[in-house]
Image (cartoon, rainbow, N blue to C red):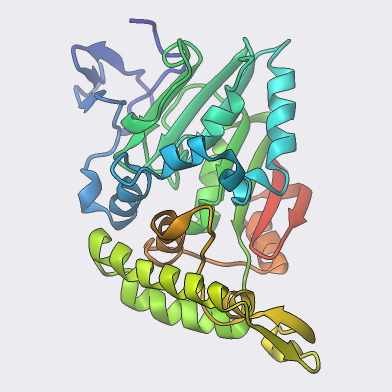
Length: 343
């Protein structure tokens, strides 16, 4: 077996490097063992015992097939936030650097492996080293380009709100659309900062704060949906997809005669479904996704245990609280993107 490109340390005392012992990893100092099948699991509980882990095990697991769908439907993938904002440029820069120098990347909350696949698309940069970590139980479902895993890339089950138990530091720490799903985003940013090399870049994206009526409705619905088991919550979110589809089918438009700044509504003509989506309720639907995969998008909004939203000023305050500074920033209606450096 090829040695992993990173050295995992015991999460208990953060000193001893874990060693291989059959199907497990073992701490030579305290004797604690950790499963490494299908990936090293440094958490002391099964996904079902944690609401966030349980949600994303369903969200990114093979039975739902969301990753396979996007891999086969590249045009559909273009509408996702992962193909917008500063992400494509960042990944191109990382790949270009890794052609001539060693570049280490920590993908915090790596989800379905989309960033991994973007970074290791052909031609594969020969000096790129990647570690992906997430709390969910479907990391073994991520498909790898040939001969990458174990040589240049490595996955580990870990809670990114805690400092990563890895001996190495990273040139880039990437946390796409995930800080807002952790209990304490400022604490999460501080943990991610610890993984950076001096001069390294922490790239994040977070949800924007929406119009006030949309915020109120979303919060009320989340209070009802979050406590539901994943299967039941998914069924409820399907109703939102059906609502979005049927609103789109009407082709109706609404004209607002003047700006309504308190409500976050601008004057002019609006498509009815888009108007309701942006100002009243997230009922996302896209024909390329169909009902099934549109439901996955709504499920990812309404069911995670935490889903903080931020104004631009709130994000800057969060970054400052974590001891970071903004080196690059852009935003759209749905997410903020920021490249951060340690002060």
